Length: 257
Image (cartoon, rainbow, N blue to C red; front, side, top):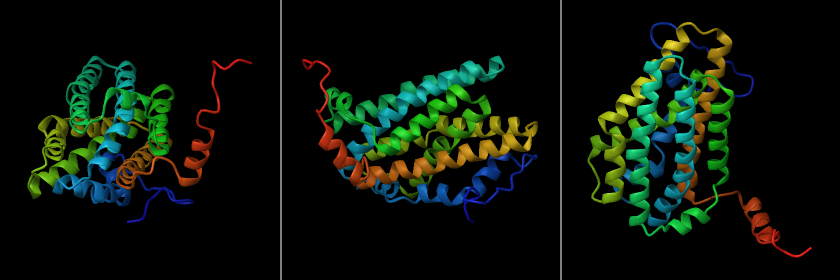
């Protein structure tokens, strides 16, 4: 199935009982499936991810989780009722206690120091992805936030479930990633985010549904690109990287005038 948000294309979206989120998943199957089949994910499942690839992923995952947790806090504040607020607050707590802790532990095991993490810069894809999250968090509605956050949760949960079914790898760091994202808690959060977006879509107008579809599409594509840059170790395109290296250290705020 072709991507519905290609130039000139208009997605046919349903917000009826079968579930708006299921329609999004089907309409954006190309990017979603490409992320699930990416060599980076396959290497996690086989335990063959190279240390430099794993370190690159962890550095940029740190930037992502920093802003992801901010957006969850904004989503909780934006939630219209206490039940939604409590759910999102628990998701924020789960992310900090499980995902962030796993990220930090694995980084330490791979020799990444706090100094290296603080000195790192986000890649082009990471910066664009996190900027999208933050802008949606401050400018969007709660369903906007759900739509842009859902692909990450779905892709990680589904990828880990599929990898578990094939057999866990011997590599302890790859195994820990799979076990974390295949956990019942992660599956529950993915299901809740989808169900909550479905509930919003029942009373939404077509323009809102199209906006949510666009945000979901961007989330899927950025997840695919996140895996791709971690696999290729490309932080910035070559031309930009050359320009950044040439200008590195050119400005010193403490230099005498």
